[in-house]
Structures are given as structure tokens and as C-alpha cells.
Length: 102
Image 1 (cartoon, rainbow, N blue to C red):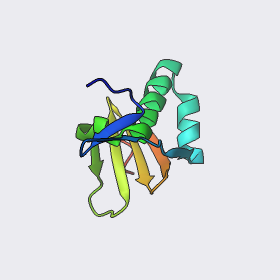
Image 2: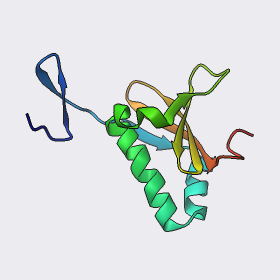
Image 3: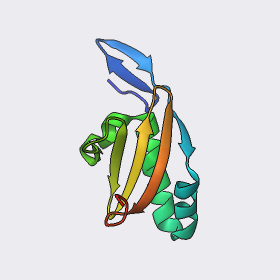
Image 4: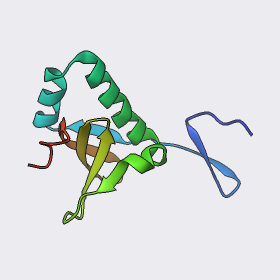
């Protein structure tokens, strides 16, 4: 059975996928503006992929220890800290892996 990216199969029914709205914090936007275009485009692409299909990046997503609501997305040497609600992804921070947790 061939399906497009806008549908998923659940219990023999095809249901449309509604992507989450993405909201960037000021710190995250500034980090994207300061990095080179190739890296920025790669990070934005992964964030958009996470908004549409969270299961596709499951091995790169972890819940932060000690935090009930914050999650971490790993993209190479970069980390994206975000909060996920029902229909919104709040991108809180984007930074290299060594300094993102400070």
C-alpha cells in the first residue's frame, strides 16, 4: 500500500496528519540567523519534519532529565530544546551540544 506523507495508517484506517504549528523563541531565531545557511536550513528542515511526523525522528528525541515538559532534538553537533503541546511546538533554544544545557 502506497501512502503519501500527509496520511498515516492506524488500525486499517488512513488518517490525515495535521502538522503542529512551530513557534521560535527570540534566542532560537537569533541562533538560526548567526549560523551558516546550510546548517540553519538543515536544522529548520528537521524541526519541520518533527512537526509533521514526530515518529520519524524518535531515535534523536529525548526528554530532558529533571524536566517534565522539555525535550531535546539532536541534529549532528547541534541540539534543539523544545516544548511540545497539542498543536504547537515551542522551540526554546538552538545551540551546539556543549553549551545548550547551560
